[in-house]
Length: 431
Image (cartoon, rainbow, N blue to C red; front, side, top):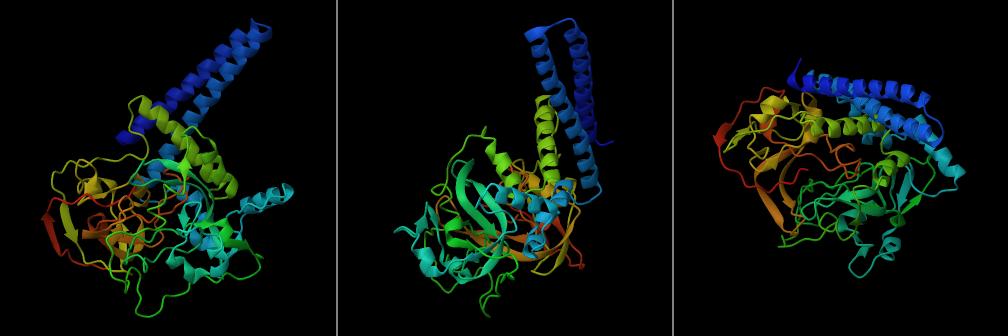
């Protein structure tokens, strides 16, 4: 049994024993009491038993998840939430959970959006009428890249109730009346060729619901000669986009605000099964870390002072396999970075999995300054690999995860182009 599994098992068994002991004590003690005293003992005892049961159940779920990850199998949360993947939502396929949510919305006479709803982007003139002098609605800019989607129809991919404030407070912040549309990302053509491919945030005022039986238009192909991340505009020193304005478009939110967990479930961002797995894993992790355990997912930390540069010359369309976590840890420094790029715990979900390269990222806008950052070492984006809803209390920005070639293995037998030890600049922004 791996060290991680050993500590998980100890915590789960200990929680189960505590729950069983408390249950026996409550039954025995309550028999000799009456009135308010008996009710108090039973209420407190029940809470402890339920909490202990959740921790124990979470522990066995974590053991199962860790076993799948060790064998290179798809993560349990991602598998249970597969019906919310972009390609499924784009197809218009509705599972029972979405149908039930729609029935509840109808019974409540609600007009709020749900995942899977068909929306048509309003005309540019209608949208401009909602904007202030700075081109924003409630602090959120309507960007030039979004104009190409006017009058087109898309399915709602996610309902966004919070955003992560990159580079400023590094906290989750509340945002209202915002959704993501399936397949719609910023191509950076109006922002100096930024290649971040951020999810575009849409205010519901910019959209109108349409009949589900109408076929979606989908993202239209870019004109020839305009690949993603290029622009004919002269580069500026500072840019303003949705990513740089996340703080202005949102408001502070308490970490104790339970709505941030429930709203994604009610909107259909996560299935009930995926929600339960994530919540039980979270509860277990809190207890596991209180007793000095490793928490899930287990991640070995790097210890290099100078991290290696490894190149295969991977290009869009190449098939790759994400290597195991131990091999990845061997490429990281003490801050878990390789040449400035942080390896995120979210990325562990994809170890052992096979994907195709979607794009090479060489420049992105820094959200704190608005300046264009030219990466000294390009990173890669993999097709269909975004930050999942689980990592930050079911946030829904679905930003792409950035990968170093050192964390991937090509499946086409490409030779290594070179290995070097160079101290990296710390500029990249995976979270």
